[in-house]
Structures are given as C-alpha cells and as structure tokens.
Length: 116
Image 1: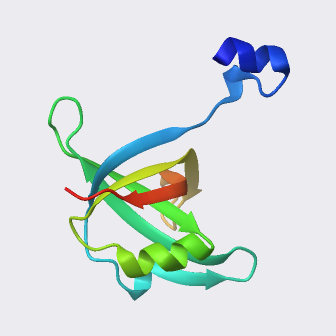
Image 2: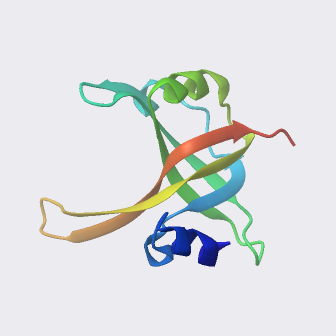
C-alpha cells in the first residue's frame, strides 16, 4: 500500500507520524483538563494507561482539539476503554532551575470509546 501511495505522489512514507493506541482513561477528567483557546477552540487534555507488550503499565498524555474535545470531555470517565489515533508531538523546555525537560504527547485526531 505504501508503495502505491508513494507512486501516486500522495505522501512520502518517510514522513509519516501516526499513532494508534488503546488503553484506559487514567483518571476522572476535571475542569483543569478542559479549556478554550483563542486560536484552536476547545482543548481536552487526558492520560491513558496501557499494559503494553510486556504487561508493564505505560502512561501516555493526549490532547484533543475542537468540537470533539467538547464532546469527549463530557463522555470520558476514569477507567473507560478508549482507542486514539493521532500524531506524536515532542515538547522541550527549560525550567526556572535551568533543567532541560522533554516530553511527548499524542495530538489526537480521533478518540473513540470502545467499551470493555
């Protein structure tokens, strides 16, 4: 499939940044997880936990924007099983003590409640 897409000029397969993941919502979303931005509208921050391949728990931060952020902020609850699709974004910053931090989050384009 990738070869066909590359031949058609649709995209360069070397530049794909796509994540698909399922897991459980880590905690009950609260007002600190939802806000409105002047440029991008609604924003919903969430965390999901997965068991991973080796059954060792992993926690991932996610962010959802726009109308879907409003919808899923109201629908998601602690321990709900969800499927997310999006792209990985890496963030770097230096704190007040000049310590360099880096972090990654999934900027979700889709989030679906999939039950147990």
